[in-house]
Every structure is written in C-alpha cells, then in structure tokens.
Length: 253
Ligand SMILES: [Zn+2]
Image 1: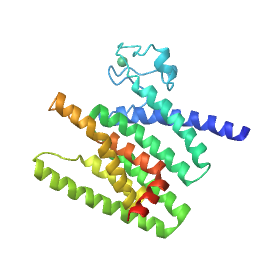
Image 2 (image 1 turned 90 degrees about the horizontal axis):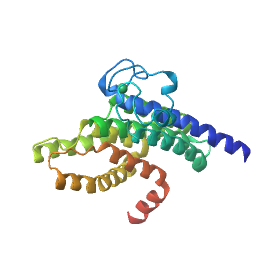
Image 3 (image 1 turned 180 degrees about the horizontal axis):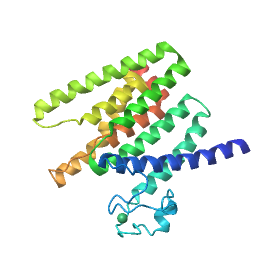
Image 4 (image 1 turned 135 degrees about the vertical axis):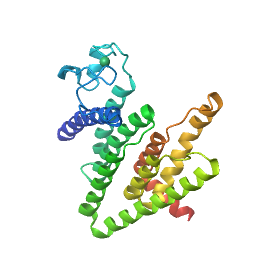
C-alpha cells in the first residue's frame, strides 16, 4: 500500500514534468527555434530556472511573462496537472504493464497535440513518428514478432484508408478536408490499436468534433477547427475502454 502511494506520487511528478516538456515542444517546435526550453514565445527573453517550474511558475509569476508582461494561458498549467494525474492513473488502472507505458505515451502525445493544434493548427510529425516507433518496439518486446508485423500492417492500412478519405474529401469540397497531420496521427492509431479500434477512435473523435465544428460554422464561417485534439481524445477513450468496446463489436458483428 505504502509502495503504491510512493509510485503514484512519483508518477504524478514525472507526469507533470513530461506534460511541461510536451507543452514547450508544442509551443516552440512549430516556430523552429533552437532554444526550446529557455525563452518566452512572445518576447524571446530567456527564462531563469525558477521561472520554468511546471504549474507553479504560472502562479508565482501571476499568470504573466516577467519580461513582456504578456498574459500566459491557464490552459498550459492545466495540461501539466492533467498529465501528472493521468500518469498516476495509468499505474492505478494497469499497474506496471504494457498498458501503463502506452497510456503514458498517449498522455504525452495528447498534451503536445492539444497545444500545437489549438495554437497553430499543426500536428508535429516527429513526435508522432517517435511515439510510433516506441509503440512498435514495445509490441515487439511484450508480444513478439507476429503482433509487431500486424501492428505495422494495421498502421499502413489505416494510413491508406485515411489518405483515400482525404483525397476524396479534398476533391468533393474543393478544399483541404483533412490535414496531413490528421492522416499521420490516424496511422499511429492503427499501430497502437489495430484497425477495428482505430475506426472506433476515429468515429468518437468525429462525434466530439462535430458540435464544435457546427458552432464555428454558425458563428464564424471562416474559422478552422483543429481536428487533432478531438482525434487524440477519441484514441484515448478507445484505449481506456478497449475491452468493453471489443466486447461490444464482437456482440454486434
Ligand atoms: Zn515575454
């Protein structure tokens, strides 16, 4: 019991720092600047170490940059806190296991996509690629070559399926219907969850995005809705509720 509490607290702290790193990568990487960790994204003034403490810095600095006084978003410390909590939950739900590792990777990827897609409408390729490689390596280690090959093939199939939908959608609507980042993210779904659960994740993501897209269309026609955060939330839900969803699918088909 005491051991569990230590692990949960430790994972919370690790999760907060991982979330913090992902927030910074999500903010800085699309800008293609070299000093990822040390400067304000508005005035570029380097931060001191005590101004770079996850969650706490926001409150210690009164929610503003100390140098240009630009208001900082409360969304970022919220994501850092959420990341810490989800890391702790990963152990509470799964214990030390493959699923726990996957939930941690998913949490980090989600935080980064929430930041970059909401801020710039960009889903970064490299972190998805790295996450995909880690997932494949874990599949190989935990389940063997067969699962590794099936996961790889599932990724390719989901990629071609989404690419087909994007091509048809682009021609039909005469504008970009799906971002390239969304297609790459869906490929990651295929690698992690396989084809059936990926489709469920895509459906959940689309359902979540629909009210926001409708609201944006009704209020301001030109406003683009970032699809990535909804997709990754769909993936997260499908991952957490993997077993009930699988049971449901097997009952229906
Ligand atoms: Zn600043």
